Image 1 (cartoon, rainbow, N blue to C red):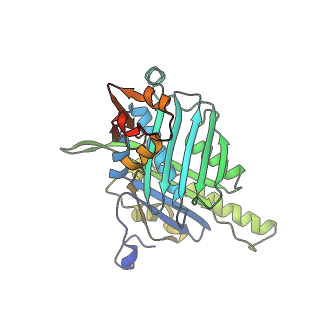
Image 2 (image 1 turned 180 degrees about the horizontal axis):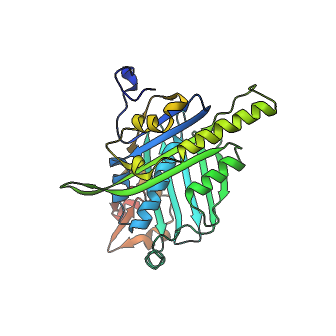
Image 3 (image 1 turned 120 degrees about the vertical axis):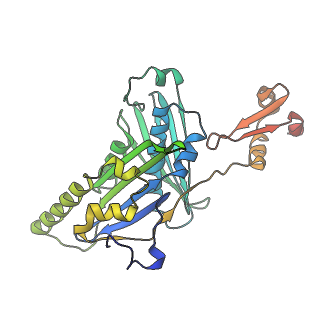
Amino acid sequence: MTEHSQERPVELIIPGDDLVLPFQAEQADVLGRLVKLGPTVDTILLRHDYPEPVSRLLGEAVALTAMLGTSLKSEGKFILQASTDGPVDLLVADYQVPGGLRGYARFSADQVANSPAGAKLLGEGHLAMTIDRGAETERYQGVVPLEGRSLTEAADTYFRQSEQLPTFIRLAVARHYRPGRGTAWRAGGLLVQKLTREGGRSGARAKAFEEEDWTRAKALAETVEDHELLDPTLSPDRLLYRLFHEEQVRAYRAIPLETYCSCSRPRVEELLRRFSPEDLADMVVDGEVWVTCEFCNTRYRFDPATFADA
């Protein structure tokens, strides 16, 4: 891949935001994905009135979910869920093929407010990564302990222990100032993994070459700066060129991303009809039943008489 776009095939013209860009650095024998999120992550985070540290953590989860979820090639969903005993006790983000993202966090407002600046909000617990390909297909789930670590550290542990796949992950989330328009959330991430080949080179010398390739690729990936992942004026293909041009980096078709939610009034009503009359009565406030979607924060109002025959 060259730094200039004149020779790029038309179908590979790459937008600048809200995408995952898969790539391969052929000389180093590694695969990777680069995510850049602008309006999509801003919409997700602004739907909730979260404290800034919680928004930043959820932004990391959304960026990580985008990079991992886009490995799905067909219908399905990737779900990332962190459950902990820390100030943020539940963190959920999911990716729906072909490019939908959503997420939410549950937290103790008092604990978050009293946490020192920069303190980790995830405590002891676990990180679960689930692939759901549909009702007639068995779910696949990988679980790794959090033990007070960051999402990046936990995901790295999962790939090393469960997949036995050397992996580098970097995530960045911040508010970006826009002249005359205030600030907006942005997120970015880089994932690089050693390419595994069946029937490839064998022997001590070959293994040494493979290790050298990975060490070199990882060192190049580690040079990426947060501001590069977040800069809206730095296109993803130019960033890849900066990092891996000596490794014959080649970008594949970008995967566009957008917000989505599966909630709707009929679906919420169907859910409420599963409750007993006693439980429904407990939900009535001032003569009405209100349900708020945890993901998109949409509120649905129902007349209790709707469920009189429930």
